[in-house]
Amino acid sequence: ENKNFELMIIGGGAAGLVASVAAGAIGVKTALVEKNRLGGECSWTGCIPSKTLISLGNLIYKANHLPLKKKKKNEINIPFVDYKNQVMDYVRETTHNASKASKARDLLTRYGVELIFGSPKFLDHHHIEIDKLNYHAKKFIICTGSSPVVPKINGLKRGYLTNQTIWNLKKMPDSLLVIGGGPIGVELAQAFHHLGTQVTLFNDLNRLLIHDDAELVEDFTKYLENEGLKINLNYSVSKIIKDKKGWRVSMKDD
Image 1 (tube, rainbow, N blue to C red):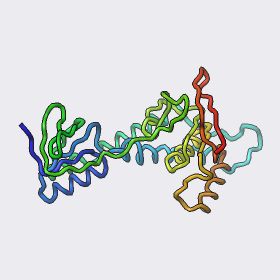
Image 2 (tube, one colour; image 1 turned 90 degrees about the vertical axis):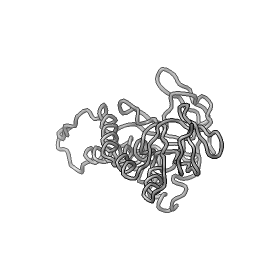
Image 3 (spheres, rainbow, N blue to C red; image 1 turned 45 degrees about the vertical axis):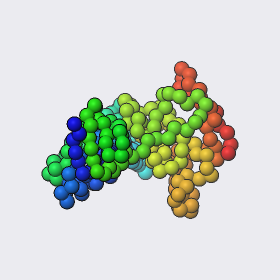
């Protein structure tokens, strides 16, 4: 027996939540299907964790680069806690607390939207199956978002991080290789650099942030390099080998 809806929305991220509430608010019998957790990328692997990390990085970097003159060696000593072992826990805690404070579930309930957790499988144009239960809808909206694209690099099979899995780190790494000079790669590279990680960024194009203003990006790239971030343009990673010390990388000039 089918459970019937006028509209079923697949994906409980920002788009799916907005669409669900909008439909429910005008009286459309609506269900929202989510396989994992409400909020999507922005809540769990994007805006909230990344901006928390960036904020911490800026504070610690600025404190470590105060324009103060030392009269004697080691005279200035800022008594920071051992933040390298605590930063990622703080980011996860902030992300979790932000999710708890979200009114998403309350809004769905208020506007009569049924929340269904599970991975749907389409049976035909109007029927899906979730955990062996069948659902019917006149219309579906697909809001499943996107997944990281892992480059095809010889030796890159496991053990790497993406913008989604990097938040599972237990502590700050001593070194980090970032492949890709888009907005996510650049902001993560700078944030980890500010927090004391030795970061090297590779981009196979001749500039970072290819969709942004060229003159601004040129100045920004110089700013990052002056901070100490290692940037390699027109280079792509051709081979990666994992050994006891970490990762060894071969690169080629594009």
